Image (tube, rainbow, N blue to C red; front, side, top):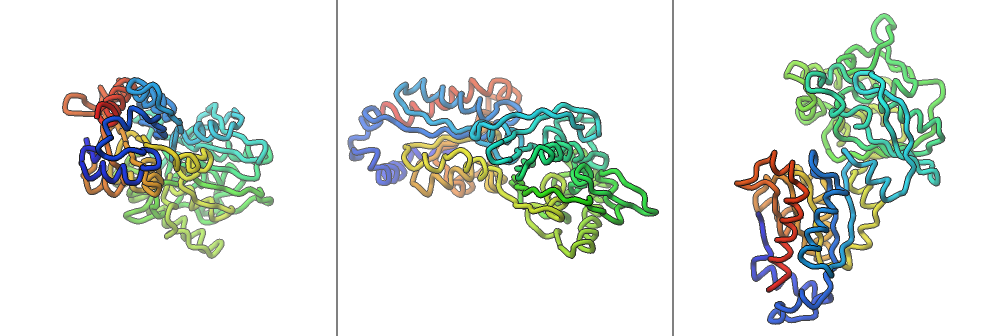
Length: 411
């Protein structure tokens, strides 16, 4: 646990910047929180494997209510570009769910869906529903064999429906094919030696000699929700950083990296564009690299897209406390994760921030970088990871209630 609320200096800081909400002097703070109506923004990401962001919101709100029934609680379920992105966007934009038959990363038929905003002709697609790692068993996970073709079929269906913009959420992918599966589904031909037509896959990247675009390009803008800054290949690229967690061994990682290098060379010769050093092209096995070679693509942080849709920036300026959280807080949290983005926003308005997580792997220096004033984890010396995941809702509610009682009651 990390707790700056316990320090006298922080209390002075807190009251100094919050005097528009707390019209009491420090000596009166024993009655301060009892007389005022606390206004709290609750905005967590998912706790992966245990709670969706909606469930986390409910659990946190329940904890606050146990301690203070009069608190005004504003709920903002959050997401980055990974799992749950489309569901959270649907919540804020009130989109329609479109069901469509596609294929999984190994080409097997699959029922999947995407979100459709008829007012703006915008489709919101989460690649994990068709090309995600969770669709495969442990023994099936092999980015040499998998493809993003299923995601491409969802995109094609949206384009045929009249989409002018597609928002594609990356995260949780089982693939490392540089988006060639998507390109294939959209009518691009991958040609190897002896003019052989190739299927898209990680292992076939090295075999590509030419890419033939379709006769008619769809007129669609792509916004890619990308929360990492890795480049396409090299030690910080798609293969070396992400392929091992998708089932690749050392030999496969080397082969995939060589394939991504080869693919970048093909694109350079074809359109005279160097995609190899663009931050974000290494996400989800290089999907952005393939798509930006032929389409109007803008890379955005998934958390920024959610914040824009939610309107949270307009609400957070007039609250007393932000409570956020996610499954794990560690050094990667700084890289555009929900907790980092929201705490920076709150800090700019001098709003204190409490964060709850499943696992905490951060020292005080990192937590200060994250502008967090209080951090608590579901796992403890007496609660292991499995128990915390199985009982996440109850533990989170209990921890939030205890936090609130300790800091905003009986002072």
